[in-house]
Amino acid sequence: MSCTTVLVGKKASNDGSTMIARTDDGRFDVKKMIVVEPKMQKRKYKSVISHVEIELPENPMRYTACPSVDLKNGIWAATGVNEANVGMTATETITSNPRVLAADPLVAYQKAKKRGEKDTPGGIGEEDIVVLVLPYIRSAREGVLRLASLLERCGTYEMNGVAFNDENEVWWLETIGGHHWIAKRVPDDVCVIAPNRFGMDSFDFDDAFGKREAHLCSADLREFVAENCLDRNQNGVFNPRNVFGSHSDMDHIYNNPHAWFIGRYLTPYSHRWDGENAEYTPESDNIPWCLVPDRKIAVEDVKYMLSGHFQGSPYDPYIGRDTGKRGMYRSIGINRTGVTSICQIRPGKPDAIKGIEWVCFGSTTFSAFLPVYANVPSLPKYLSDVTTDVSTENFYWASRLIDALADHDYPASVQQIERYHNALLAEGRRIVLEYDKKMAESGDFSLAAEANEKLCKTAKEKTTDTLNKVLQTSSESMKNGFRMSDN
Image 1 (tube, rainbow, N blue to C red):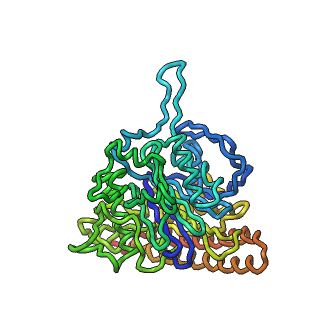
Image 2: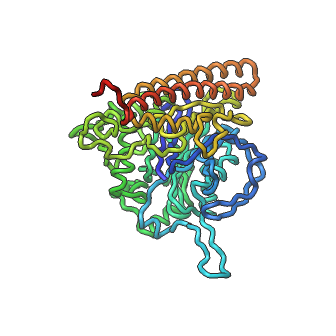
Image 3: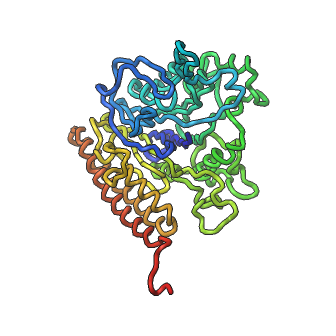
């Protein structure tokens, strides 16, 4: 499954918040956003894909989730913020190589080959990870440690990157083969770019096996690397991407261009991204895992990066003239995205309202982001009441309709889309500011549910208005249009 992740440290953001964000690029998976109360969390979990069964702790917390509406392939909760103000997004599908997978094979479900034999369960994967971890953690670091214990005990059947954030820290974990893992605390002043490849390009083993302040890993990772001759680095510098990741032709078309577009946006002045003397090109394997941005990063910047289609470059699929390079790389704002969220944990706010989750359904190029307070008993029907049938009565399907119509006639629709995005961002921010003040002054944090209703009412109004406009625009450019004056 293809995705793109952006992580923002607290000193890299404009308001001191931490942010973790990811496009969940499925196969047009129908998604909704819900709140899972402790009584709704099962005490025994069984995976649909791998059939693994796991006993869960007795003390789950409330959390938000963006599960699939059709549960035939499992929950796929994707992302959320729990009542302890810990955010999580899982997972970014990443890469590996045959040397790693031979040394520590993935743990796949195996159906019995003979009558009388039992099936062999597989490990955990993207279907499962949010449900197994997010309800039980009170910090980003705890998230890493809980997930690591599950990986070591159950294994995984795929390569994944997982992000956690709390008020002070952002952590990133990457799986290595079936049971191994590596994790790093994101420096406060940087943004991380994770585009479907093994990302980390530096790691401090001394810290990981010493104070463990910013680096964690499997207890035997050093021995695992040495015994299997995995280290391909030169001059004694340990670059995990060279050891555990890939350097494939697919990376050059599918993954690295995402890092190039985002890096180019983050550091347009401190690095050279274009021209003959560019430090990095869209196909470079050495684009840094993290960068100190040239300016502080706001939610709107994260939204822009994750909506990317190489605008401002010859690779933009919507560019008017054929450059010979148009559409040659996979866009970040791709057509089959189910949900994108930004989990934002805000400093200086009462605990009850620290967590804001910005949610966007469908293609981020055309769909808008809406903020909601995360620590609430339930979410409005506009987000949560979604079925597999198309409807304009919820944010998911209304967004998908806008996507398909606006893509059909991009030049005529793009101005309407930009106005829609900015209007919903501005009004969403205004409502959050209004209710932040109300709740701080009154101490009545139950008003967060009222705020969410107001936010969703605004989203519905602006989304319906935009849908009306792009439908009219698209209708006017239909190929079977005809007027007497055409003759």
